[in-house]
Length: 234
Ligand code: IPE
Ligand code: IPE
Ligand code: MG
Image (tube, protein in one colour):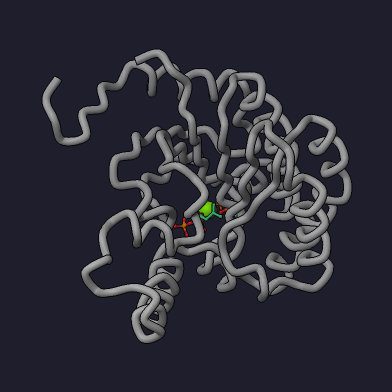
């Protein structure tokens, strides 16, 4: 298998530990992490990856100190303000998954602006997972399916796997081919549980601020040497 992943998803982890090692505040780690996002989006585009999902804020990240949550929101706004124009010029289409209605209005405004500006772009799809949690997404899907049964838009007999996929916030995306997690943690932390049924995983000890083109190449090389069988035989 020599294809690059069509859909690459990344759990960007280790900003805090990167900062701690340098006796810096956690916010400095998040700031450095944004630089990695810039680099990696560019590289993925160059490699011909079609969809890049970045796990930026989970439904559980609200548990962090309010100051840190605020820093993350502010960095998101700064990133969008600074980058959207250039992303648009590079034909990048920006989308999100997760419930952004709980985010501050400035974030929502910048995100709406980014969707609107880039909606017809045909290059790489940069999909940001914001206030995303897979269980919450599945819960919402179940509610909507029940509602559609009640409204007689669908029958119980119509419920199959692809129908369920179509009620998730990832409905416009193919399942991820590869999920990378940085920082040495080896868990999903509520990311793409349904969609990741046959995803390949790659874990690296490198913290997100230090992840770069070389590390990405290592991940993709590893992926390209995997044999995906989907339950069948070779
Ligand atoms: C990832 O880095 C960024 C987010 C989860 C928003 P962390 O902030 O989780 O960094 P560590 O895991 O504490 O090192
Ligand atoms: C997962 O990282 C969420 C994001 C990268 C946005 P966390 O750092 O929040 O996950 P846990 O707490 O280590 O599982
Ligand atoms: Mg973490």
